[in-house]
Image 1: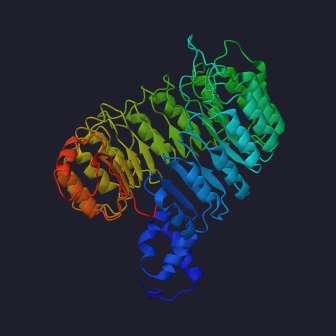
Image 2 (image 1 turned 30 degrees about the horizontal axis):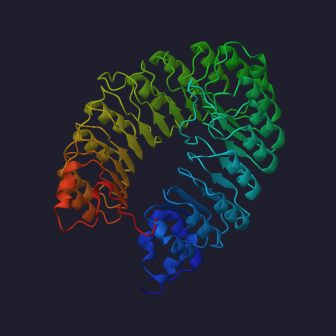
Image 3 (image 1 turned 45 degrees about the vertical axis):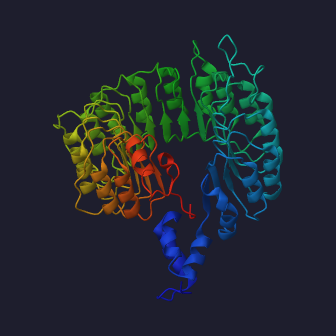
Length: 558
């Protein structure tokens, strides 16, 4: 390796060029060009993901990347104590740490980390096993300057009594005592997610609202004992509140206090009331409040009518995100009328709206000029009726059309033509889609980076005579994809990083070897339940993995 590149530029110029590359995963090929590029890539790296495969290299990685600000341990499933101690003594000045999906949170490791990481601002402990009040006491004492905390959806087993009701008295869990401790110690708290904690009550929200003056975002989805009264208190008494997310608010009476609370929410711009009873009167109160609203989620909500949602959208025509998933009364004609208010939308979710057809798809493509993301999973699109005006929308980057049984190749081709700059596409569980659609997608949408074709049994072979220069992730779990298709993907996808083939019974060791040998940047391949791969690999002397059904190709540059 040479010391410097052929073109001699100041380090500051090279840093600007590196930053144009985008995600740090693209730094790896640059880092082997010369020592100067290696030093620059090391310096610019600010985040690190630690998995079961890379944890052995953690001390070396912590020494190499000395400007890290974020570390993600959510893919690590071993004993967390060791990695926490290594991070604590690394000398890094971390701002964010993700400890999600852990069986246990070691208190001593948290204390050690807190004593050395004084500037930690964000801590994520979502889906942690055995999360207790005790852990919250430790977090509150160890990280007093936290601004963001996520303790959502703890994975407790046997948290229910013999009668079937949640019982925190018999089984340990987070309670109001733990949340109160957080509220008294974390004075800089801006954002907290308590979703899925089944044993907290209204007093938890009231404590947070009363003690955390800077609170801007609070989420309490799937918290059975949270009522409208607590939400009304938070909305009324938190002057900095920007976002509130709750679900399953099903009171049998009209709570006037909850409706009137929105008048006091001068900063509220994001409302999520999924799976709740939302009457028109509540929507009218939001209209009268004149909020700076730009995100609204009413997924799977009952109680409101077209008149209610129409009046609200007419008031807030600057919404950037609208989620109406599962609002079953919506029709194509309803969307035509509502689309007059969609001019600023960047994301819309109409999944599980079973009455919506191709007409709705083409309507929103025509009317929403800033649209970036569209979700229409399990709708009724995919028929052969293309009578609506078809207008190309070059802004759309992400499209989800999964689980639509009637969606076939003809429709997919039309949709691909409408969205030529797609980067992410999900066609999972669309049984009528074949390899012909996939080829057409790649041909028309040259920016595709992620493609999901899980459970698409009709996709087998692929005939592609052009490069897939942008494709980085492909998920084909349970599809009909075969060795010939893998060979084509391997040959054409020079930037492929992740490939999921779990349950692909037409794939053999031959196809796997071809794609692994061809895709030099491939980091991970999932071959779980690929029975024919198992047989072929185990009979071969060229196997490098003792258990190919869980093969993960992870390099030391995670």
